[in-house]
Image (cartoon, rainbow, N blue to C red; front, side):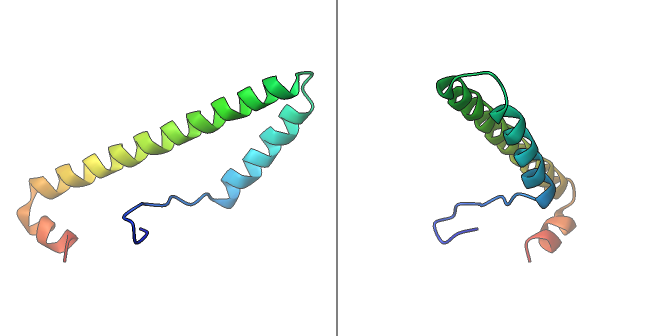
Length: 78
């Protein structure tokens, strides 16, 4: 977490490698620069939405877990 409260989610090497593979594939498609840019932007937005959804789901699961057992709540946050 940053000092502004923003949570940064890092990318794994596997993610970076796959992104490079996809980028190389897209670069060889017979599409215009504008189409390329639109495609890449759509893909980035899709990944960001998936990351956000996964974070929210994981957080909600954690909250539910904490609610089920007050003893666990003390252990989780101390």
